[in-house]
Length: 611
Image 1: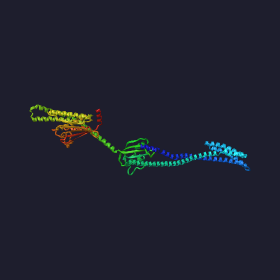
Image 2: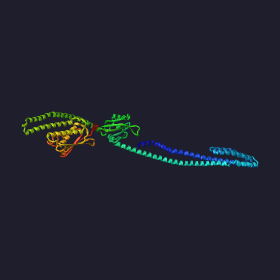
Image 3: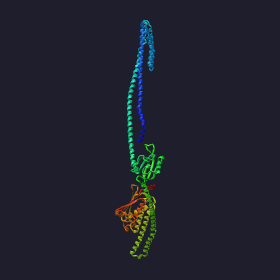
Image 4: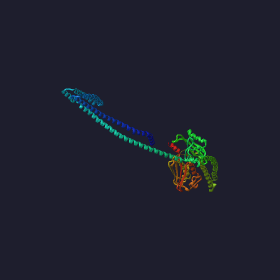
């Protein structure tokens, strides 16, 4: 949002400055011109009123002169009479022009025009009386004409009314002119103040623009310095080339790789002259030229070079065309990565893979031999064991009562050892199959497997108690809710059978025996299961032997078994990516913990089963 506002401000900055200059210069000029014209018009009307007054006074004086000349001619005799007559006629001749001029000057005032019309009529009558007086009449008649002149045809009142109207117009127009002049003065002052304010605003705006420009230049310089520092700090060689493949700029890593102490890379050095011939290959130079002329980007191009240190290196070259703000033509940005170590590592990996393939073939051969051995154990050894057990039993029945106590003991030992050997072979075969058979992953309900295993163990205890002729050993089961996981169901069944069977077996001397099964999720989404009993326990110093083949921590006479069950449990968990450990104290019971990793498929299958 701030960026858009700043961009809009920059775009409209010049038009705003131009508008401000126009406001400063043009608007005050137009306003002052307008009010000055109004003031000049008001002054013109004042002058016009003064001209009308002057014309009126001139006309009044002319009428007085005509009256005086008429009376003088009526009373006078002698040589001056012709001269007075000429003056009288000249004065009478000036009456009409002055009346017309006065009429023209007051044509915009209808009231004054009416007065001028009446005044013209009276003036004509007075002129006629003055002429008759000038022609000479009897004294009695002369007195009547004088009475008409200063009584009946009196014009003083009309002149006073006319002048009064003009004085009123003069006062009005003078007041209007004063108002216009005052307005012009105040407007000029306001325009001056406005110009000063606008000029101050423009100066402030220019100051802000200069600050912004200076700040932008400073920030641009800092950004350029930061970018240059980053480029110089990068350990990957970087170089800029122009169209002639001359060096415009390079970082320190490029100098270290291609510039020897005796031949530093100078400004505008040609690429083919750098690095003791590392760039003289025409193929790579043609590819760099294509980047600039044809717009072809160069990606992960491997090039074998001999650098300034004299070593042959495999370099990974990337190049693309770019535009610099201070140049009109395009340049090529090239980065160089030394992948000699990676190539050596790849070669080493290839060699190790070939060795691994040989080892895999050896392991495959060993597995085939183990399968043959398992087949031999399961078929070739079982027949002799069946013969030993069978013939021992037949010998016992054949001799019958002829056997003494020692003989019967020997035959029982032979039969028990044969049966134990058969059990041991079965457990070994199971252990072998757990490591070789493929996992058949599916949704496995751990709760159902535990309940199924519990039922099998309870049935076995009941059978053993019935054969011994005594009560069955009581076991209290505490089984928490267990989840559904994706696993191999047969292997998980084998796991629970071994763990719960051990818990029941080693708790046989406790009354009652308590076996607890619990579950809780791990922090990473896995599953942590716990099997706890209150049996004889074991010493933690020997915990490392628990999960080995044929490893036992108790006498076989006390607790029968082959020593393969926990080894099978560890192998099952290893096949599923899990692990197992145990915690115990002598006569304080044992706790076995095992963890299975998280599986997204387990969540999906569980959701589908619940649905």
